[in-house]
Image: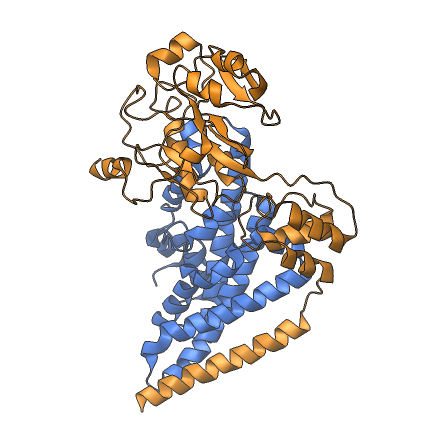
Length: 198
Length: 283
């Protein structure tokens, strides 16, 4: 699979938020304004790309030679948790306002199934190290795309009249559902038309 | 062998990451003002959020960095405000009066009428979004217990008749229930208050009488019977000025719908499953 195909797959065709429905917690929680949504997106890109690279090395150089592949979930979580702690330290140092805006959702990246998901998917798809990294990066990019669009929509929604029972989170869920429907347009067939048979 | 390898692999990885993080934490340490730590230590640490900040740590930071008002900590009260004033080197004027939340409504299935049967999610704000609630009275307690869910100290529960009541001895005055309550029937009163007017309806007396047997009808009997008690009737609803020190017993006894209640009689039921909860489970 070419790198372009990997990127298109994880950004559009199997977008983690809108077609695989992974990592919805920060997607709803931090998408209230564009600035913190973009900050969250970049934090996730960083964690996802580094996590899929590191987990690739952990898997192929530690778990496989020792025949303890069944430990992949727990070791991957270990990697992700440490990375998230690192990101938290870095963000607190370089951008306290962003740290404040992300709040509890930053440590929650640790338990974000999207991050563990990309690590497991990359291993299962038999990618090499660079492909894993690219997959992680583009999955993060897909997250950024989804949360960025969501936050712009929600900022617009703030000034619109919304029926009372739908105000706040309910209308956000409906918006997310409609976005997911739109993303159904990106499917494997489209990818094959663009890039030829794989 | 596999067990040993598994153990070693996870232990070594964990150890490496731990050391890495320790180094990173040293290298990227953010210097914290000593006063923030001192203020945080002075705060009660309940993280109730009653001050409007995310927790005690956030409030401490806001006090030191953004000159936030130091009297916002309701659970801590006057003592904490004075302690913070000392740390920050500023003077403060606070009263020692503790405030507690009280539900100003006694309407339930037996005492008032309902517009429709509600079978939606058990949340007062969801119910309130539908025509102002299922009670004919649009000011009263909706009884689904959203206040109980936000109360950080579990001071709120149903009593044996299915009314929502606050235990004033447990209440830490954080005000979260007041914020979440859609009808505003949850109001703060001084801890020392002897009576409350357990009604929140500003409808005219004749209308209140139609839908509720325990609602204030604005008859001004309390004003007449206990002139020193600080009662004032405004918008067909009696209110108590708690600064008035006169007796209120006469008014409570004479009140036609008996909605002036002794605060000490208002206690949540200690039996966990109340009539209303059983009804919820059936529904």
